[in-house]
Length: 140
Length: 140
Length: 140
Image (cartoon, rainbow over all chains, first blue to last red; front, side):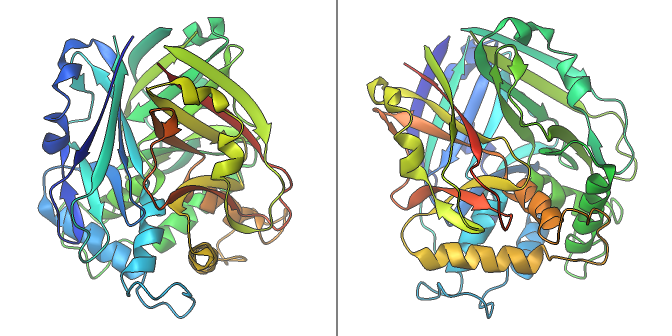
């Protein structure tokens, strides 16, 4: 079994949901040589997250942002952690709802995603900057 | 370390939450020979998901469906992605809230689940059809 | 590739969100010898969960508890599974929203977490008791 592990910084993205599949895969060409394995992408932050969802229609990503803003509101009366700005505490909650990593099977040299699946960077801060990822893959 | 990887199609299930532990485990008898390892089940869709929860009382699964319908509503006024039906955009959001994979430790030839844990297929579409899974396991 | 797997019981925690990073890492000193790998922590329960979030300000953990109590209410009129107490069905739903495991890359003998990341035990029951974990790590 082979294992590779690398750290990368994603280009900064505006608050919202963004497709980053290609940016991540370009970083791990090694997996092309493997017939079976696993790819994990981990984000080293608590106010941005990763998920897998629809890769075609940009309105899906817009609707994600609208929904999460509605159901994880800014300035909720019950927040005590408020000194880092209105977007901070919701960003923490959204991150845990969506998760800090995605794990994708590798088959025949490629991530074995469904036709409509892509990797989303979920940027929950107004000014999040470049986000650090750890990409770990193992396979044979 | 050994690794196996297979693709399977689950039987079609109605919209709602369904126990599929046995159906999945019957597909990977190889893990019975391993003392320690990891089993990942990945769903290749963006409108159905996988989670681990209570395996005994069917009303738990009914309450999941009720809760997610309440908190990820159909026809929300802020949805722009509406042309695939009222159940489509909520299905995408539910999928990311619950996740596209589960990873379960393997111990002494069995998935090391708690007494009350089972694997749920979370079918978020009205007519989702058979859902494709990739099952990857490695161990020794 | 090396693999270790152990079961541990966390000290009982009150309902709420708790940092348990140190308690877990003390249990797997073996990873200090590895240059790259993966650590998975799995909780064998359906009314408590694990997530990764902010490790510094305790009010973040308080706000998590407040938010999840608001958005996964007790005694919702649509719950049918009510005989185990008002905190039971919400606990199941919260567990699946947050997830039953975390997977963290290991780099240079340490979990490769961001500066502000820690592992949370999310205790959703009023009296959950000691929670059982399976810790699996592999690496080289």
